[in-house]
Structures are given as structure tokens and as C-alpha cells.
Length: 185
Image (cartoon, rainbow, N blue to C red):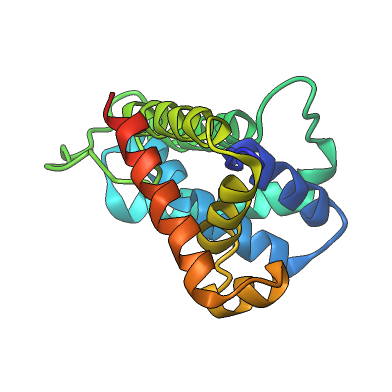
């Protein structure tokens, strides 16, 4: 089974499409990154309305300059965050040296992404599961992978394997029992 896609794996192709003028890709990029970029703007400006204005400028800049993104120099998230940071600082400087912003009560804005701890735990769980699956005989591992990772029904699986439904269910039940024992050890 392929490893889970990283944020970079998802965003880099979107940037390529945005650079080619794909408006749908820009919408998808916005959906995936706007919360994080809004947080960058808000931390610098401490003003929600002004941060929203700057965020709009950020995505206009992304639309116009997407062709300048170089994946060998930075991740998409880093590149976008840099644009947001620079636009917010520009806005802050435009206020003048004596400008004062009211503090924002809540600067923690969830971006919807899993925490690093969650991602590491999931990777560890995935590695343990793959290790335990490799200890099963080939047929049992295949039926479990097909049923649970591909979402194939037991009936369809029995047809694919040219085996009685009850037999396939038994293979899966015994295999899951072995997996449980392996994962608990």
C-alpha cells in the first residue's frame, strides 16, 4: 500500500496547475491553505478585517506569480507563508510608525491539518500494521488488504478468489485475530 500523501505531495501539483491558469486549482489551494495564511496575517496585524484584506491580496499575488514557485527551493507552504508574511508586514508598515492595533483575543486559528504528533503516531501505527500483515500467509494478507484497504465486499472478494463466501470470511476472521495478537504485542 502506498504511503499517505503529504501536504507537499498535494499542494505542489496544485501550484503547477495554478501557474497554468487553472482557477479550480487556485480554489483548491485556497481551501487547503487559507486558514494557515490567515493566521500568519492575523499574528502580524492583530486585526481581523485587515488580515482578511491582506489575505485576499496574498491570493491575488499567488495567482499572478505561481509560475515563479520553485519546489527545489521551498515547499509550497513555506512559499505561500512567506508571501502572506511579507504582505502583512507591508500593511503594518503602511500604518506608520505610531500606528496601534487592538490585540486580538484568540490568535490560535486551527488550520485543519493534523498535528505532528498525530502524523507520527499514524505513521508508527501504519508501519506496525504493515509489519504484522507481512507475517501472515500471502493469501490471508491479500484478502485482508483487498477487503479493508480497497473496500471490496466479502462477496466480491469470494468471486475474485473463486472461493466460497464462508471460506473467505474464515480466512479474514483468522487473519484479523492474528493481526490483533501481533499488534497487541
